[in-house]
Length: 192
Image (cartoon, rainbow, N blue to C red; front, side):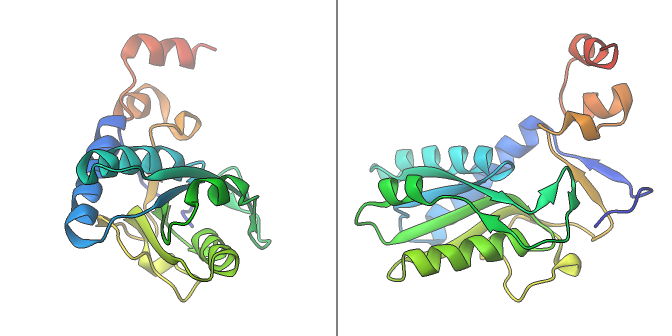
């Protein structure tokens, strides 16, 4: 977990999109086709969208998409309680008779969320292969035995990664610019 004085590293929307495509290309090269991509909301939702679209275009076939809500965090700080995994109904409908699931999130920090989701999916779909992907990984912060099957970049444990949808974590005009916000919109946001 980042301290209050941790340096922030900003991921722009353009960078996130580019990293999603890099990851999708890597997965298409290294993996058999997936039947379902599950985005862990909130951060994994955009990642899952990009991956699923790339997969369908590359493989020329339907790939299901589902979002899975989890609880256990309040804001950006861990709440100290276990992770509760939401309903798998959307995943159940999208998976059909498929057997390959890819769980997507933006960052693997402590790992408790991904671990809880993987455990729930393996319990619910024991015949399925479940793989995990995150764009970024902080191995020194991990509190679990698993690690992501795929990731693009490792960050130090004390680096605070700010994603383009996390405008409340940006430090002023410069931080909003780093996320890719135009000056006009950033100033409007700051004058709220």
